[in-house]
Image 1 (cartoon, rainbow, N blue to C red):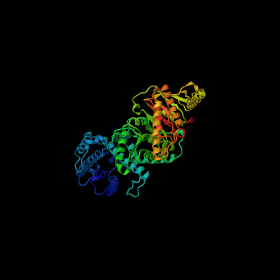
Image 2: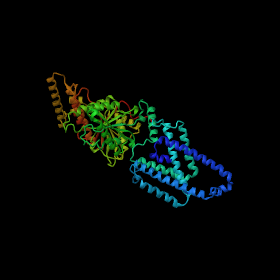
Image 3: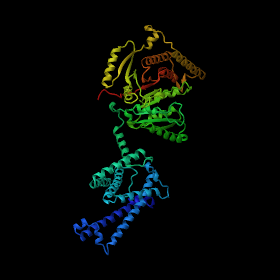
Image 4: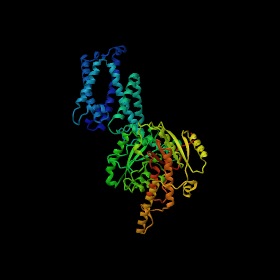
Length: 603
């Protein structure tokens, strides 16, 4: 290893180290074998076992030749170690592999004085011990560990067919490296079990420390290559077939900056990673954090790289298992459409789109948000992606803020059990573990409430989910319009103001269409408006909001089904419907499943 330790001083390391190592191994092997035969011919077995300086007794012309040779060879080995070891120590320190070794750094072209003094101190300490038999096994263990590590790296790189592995030695085979590594370990155990266990434990601690605290980048170790090959093999074995509900895992795609007014140096809303962890059991699983930069790719490529680094730092800081992706697109809608079509591989594509609710669109008069919001939801429906929209993200609890009360589910449409699964995942978090689940089933007045309650209870029991089932009856729009049941028309201020804003907006669209002589258009698309249907949607949202406020005002979090955007309705109208739904509810998750089950009654 002397050539490797001083590789920086060699003119051609790729040629000198292999040739020098082979010549050194061959010459020393010949000398050792010759010594065995010569000493065997000169002395008896008893003399060989008892006389440690037999070579001096038989030396010519006097024993002083051997004494001088021992002293010179010892000094030569010591000087060689004092030349190579400090440089090796300084090289490790310069690479930031072990932060604790920062004191031994040396600049290029300078002598590693601090490392030399430290190495000298270690050598003097070993000499003071005065027992060569105690020092030798320790040194031998570390040398054998070094040789085993080199052989193991060669074995992994050759076995995994890494493209970067191109050895000049053409007779190399991975089996030779494996045999070499195993021989080193076997010899270690043959020398001393105690020293071997201690050496392996110390090496493991150093490896763990480097992986945990090391500041250096990826050095391309063999284990990373093994992980990569394992991931590729696992991905191929998964294929692209639909995953069984028993094996379904949420892979959320977190939309970091869809409409939030965040400072430019803040890559993501601070609570989004906390919410992403709530969607994964014990925090395990993959999350994809995505942000879209409006503009031309050639002009914004560097900005995208910088934003990606900032977002990755944020993910690491929040201890969230995930990756960062930055997309440059002419508009947010186009960027999201590209993401939803191309992101992921096989069955490792994101299956849930997570974003915050655009609460600021009316306050700051951001008129482009409704069309973008509706476009994103429609893209998710076409791509068969689930959607989770978070309202009240600023008040979302972190892992240390314990919540009490209930997690209320308003189960309106069949969503494959996604809302049920999300509520169970919330219960696994420390902040929500004290809560209980309530499932509210919305039914019309003429339905059999008790029969519905029994069916839902049976379904939850089969799913092994504990929850209280409550059936809430809500008058239909037809009954409301006909005035049946003795109830009057709902004339609340919120309802009336929403109606007025929609009619004002529609009248502006109609005036613009008449001036241009074109049909009613919004965002380049033709819209067809039926005022009765608009009133129906507004009434439905108003009654659902009133029901949620009546039963779940003190709930820790509310989950409700996301209504799909009505066909050919203006995006502005849909935002009015949604605002009416979430009015005065501090923390709500609006959930839309997709055309498949994520829970199953079969074990």
